[in-house]
Length: 220
Length: 137
Image 1 (cartoon, rainbow over the protein chains, first blue to last red):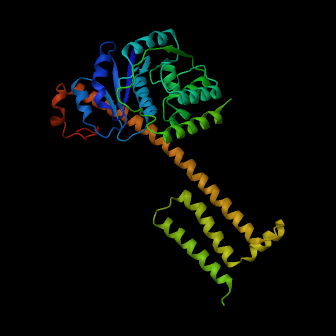
Image 2 (cartoon, rainbow over the protein chains, first blue to last red):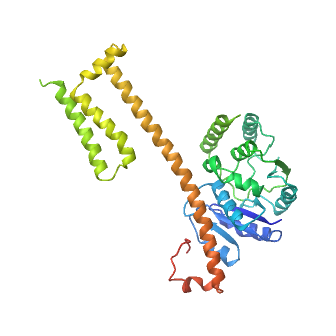
Image 3 (cartoon, rainbow over the protein chains, first blue to last red):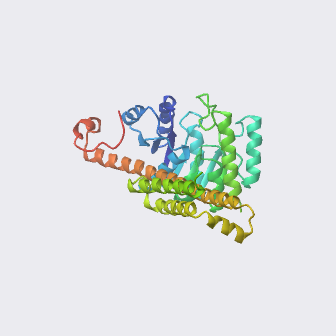
């Protein structure tokens, strides 16, 4: 089974190279997706070290970078993809744990980490979870595996209007009847101090509202 | 004092002229221009014959005719606005899909070039005749 590891990157490249080198010990195929970073000079470092990459001229969002990776993986004939954050939060061992589940035939594999997040955040997640009727608890995790058939579904239609790889993606995947499983994986504390998805309180609130509308409109 | 009809006619004519000029200069695409032309025409006609509004109000049982006018105007603007939002959403999704595909195709083109050219490190100097697609420094 050929698996491609996708690393979406947006302005966080100082942490990137060590992460990639750690990954390379376990995986032969790695694709970095530059989501419109302002400083493009790190691409030449990647090229120099022999890493493959895609590059957007402007920022589209985390999920869209991953979708571009899906398109590449589909074109190149990969059987599965594992998404991996470039900020040092995920460990290559975690990614290794995903692969067997993909081989087993699961379409979407989510690597979860229970020790994450503050109390109010956890309460919010719980509420969203209840509303969506999903069985998966850590739906903000960026460590995920996708099968080929999952990728084919996830690159079109309503998935294009999503911004983050999170609840919305899982919710729609469940509606499409993709087989999902959650796998416990150890994770590191973030190396860079801020979350790129939720830098401020306003962004959290707007995220909550957007996700809520997305779910409520599409609930069966 | 002049007749109020002159004022309404002038306002209607000005609106219509603005729309007409915008279409002529290609600022408004024809498919949007069509609805705007209809709006412009109705403004002119209502400006010339404000009696029409009074008549329709009387027929529909509305005692205060200007209220009918405002209701129609708000309705039309709402629909136009909604249409614009739909259009914007549609465009964003299309842009995203196109950009994703461009990124992938760029990569595939790059791969082909490096395969044909065995010295990838000196690529930029030898490939100067080819169009530069990937942004790099």
